[in-house]
Length: 489
Ligand code: GLN
Image 1 (cartoon, rainbow, N blue to C red):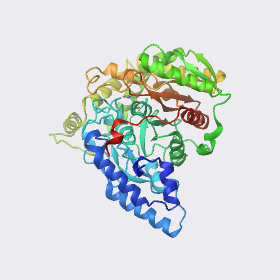
Image 2 (cartoon, rainbow, N blue to C red; image 1 turned 45 degrees about the vertical axis):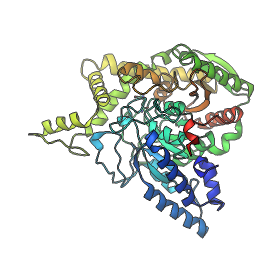
Image 3 (tube, protein in one colour; image 1 turned 60 degrees about the vertical axis):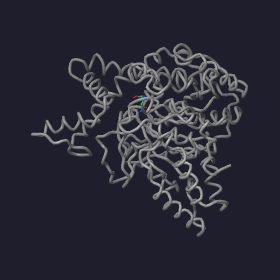
Image 4 (tube, rainbow, N blue to C red; image 1 turned 180 degrees about the vertical axis):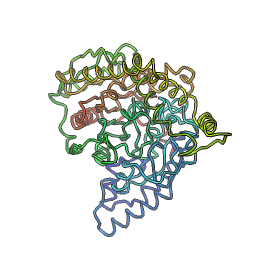
């Protein structure tokens, strides 16, 4: 097995036990990236020199017998919406084309401090708005399973980098599904933490009441390891939770036996592709075999998740994106006066989906429409949280498919934003409730041979139960085939 094929846990232990050096691991991932990047286009910026320098530091620490962080020498890729000091950070937007942050996000700082070596910044839908990564202002990322298909989005570059063997793990952000849906479409694991568990300081904001960063990995253990590193309060994010961080890795072995697991009717049947449904049902049988008590649960508000999300997220985006005005950051298109300069900059700097969201958000927040749209959506959001709470009186975890389809063809949904929005039907409820969720590969669709993900949803702050169930499921299912691209070396 080549080093680039290894998981983060494997790489970290091989380096700590001096079986391989961090430099060798880094070189393996860099050469793998050179080999496949032209096909998949996962990255917006590559930082091989920074990765080599960090690997050299780790190797000196190993030689000196210094204590090592849990990710010492592990290569990683960060979504290009996460600020990295001195490294260009674009949010895949022309408006931030020349933006070099003067500081790093908490998530990035914690990963560096744990010993991670950053290979580069990954592609995304502009400002994380989208479900296919086709809204990037720079390039179209391809799905390693089929280069004519999307990797999902908005963290499509982060998911494809892990699935193509370019990095053992990456970080994505999830506002309505952007970690879980691309993870499902690329056949990898993606975890959206409870809102407030992972600090948002230094993430370029899309919808602040929903945004969370989280790991995309090749297995559940790695997701637990990375979450352990990035979770925990940071006073620089006022919404970050003060609760202690549990031992996620230690809890993996707890298993599934005796857990009550509810299948959510509204997001597991109608509207979900039959081949995805079939694979999902088999996954549920496996959970039952492992000792879970399975029941069906109907949560009527989940059917309104998309409607609620597409009022709240654009409303917050319209406010957050007001800061990109040609004065504070990035692009500036001059005009005869300040107002014209602002509007010329925004007209040239933002892509069509971002403009659509700003218009939707501004409309729903405007006087006369606020009560009918934004306020109503906020009330409905509370009802979703209540539906979850009711379900958790009866169940420990809820499950559904992660996405209604497997990876779709490039260009298939770009002309029809509403169809694209439906890609998030299974993922938005946990986002609106601020709860935790993870997507784990459940096998391949019998229809098109592409990956299908199962989503485990947990109570807020119950990542331990969610991870232990996901881990037991993954172990029982056994290793899955790798994407065709895996064998090109
Ligand atoms: N696809 C959803 C959207 O377009 C979710 C995006 C995200 O989670 N960042 O808003």
